Image (cartoon, rainbow, N blue to C red; front, side, top):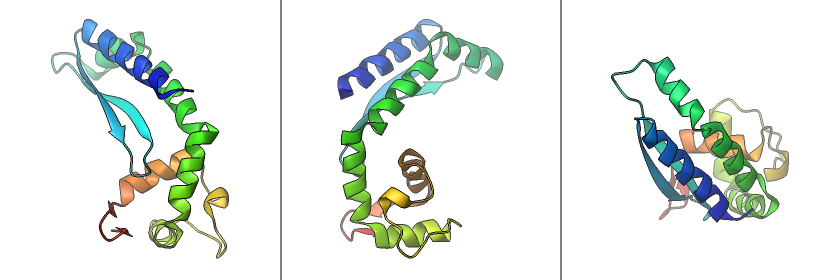
Amino acid sequence: MAFETTRTAALAAVDCIVSVGMDAEYQDEDSLNGVLTTSFRVYFNPELTDEVNSAKMDVCEVRGFHWINYVYQAQPSVQAINRKYVEGRMGPLKVCLESEGVDLDDGAVFTNLPMPPSILSMRVAKTVWLNRESNRFS
């Protein structure tokens, strides 16, 4: 799947969200591993309840974008980039995951980590920051 497919889906969701009276902004993101991804932020209308805001987002099929983006990031070409990136940083990554309570075997490699790569990416993004100069997790 081409990146442009995810971009088109994200832009359509943003346009729809704006058309139903909410604010949203689109953004491309260059991840640490070099894969270009896309996302958008939605700002709930403070004059409406969370339930109404959520219903407006559902009309715009935000979940449709979610699945298109998931397929893009789960495809073999993107996973190969992820694998190369993570395998080059397995030592510090193991320390980080273990400090977060993830049990790892001594021989753990990218392909046998105890969580899917997409979950791993989200967990790493939430718990560590790679200092590009020192190439260390902190």
